[in-house]
Length: 227
Ligand code: NI
Image 1: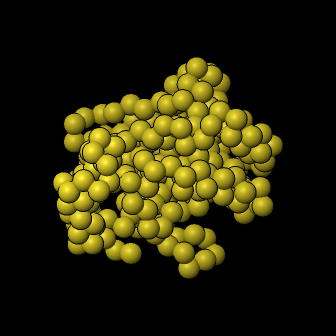
Image 2: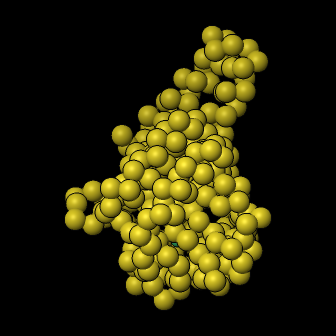
């Protein structure tokens, strides 16, 4: 499932975050690449390890934790600290796969990457190209979202970022390990959860059918989740 998650950051929050990171040190994006991606990748990345990069990552994580749609869809167990990248002057990232396991350099922190997430930090009209293209079962999906919106997609997908031929595409990106490993199971839970929210708004949370479906949701989650 590919899912758009709007409004993770307000326009003001995007502006403040951009002011913070734009002033930072940017390095060759290949510092975090695996062998195959290195061949395909041309972009810049906010240098990791500075206090500022940590602060920027924290702001993204805090915003995600306040976004119910993100939590419901991702069921996050462990989130890799968000990184930031920038494409301009024809830069692109050709078709590649993301590593299945990510270890945070110099630490024991490691995740299985179930989901990839890109949070857009530039408005679509401010650059040409820079679409995220994800190969899925139903063909190719092309994504370019307003600043502050994110796209969540299975990390198992082949994907690319098309060349940016005008302006700059700035985004935060990260991977996460979900409590529910299988994409299919996680999608069913998300759809059930969404339906329960709708029914609950109509009938109230103590309605017998809403309670029964909520129980069913939790029992499925209990069956499938690692916590
Ligand atoms: Ni990637």
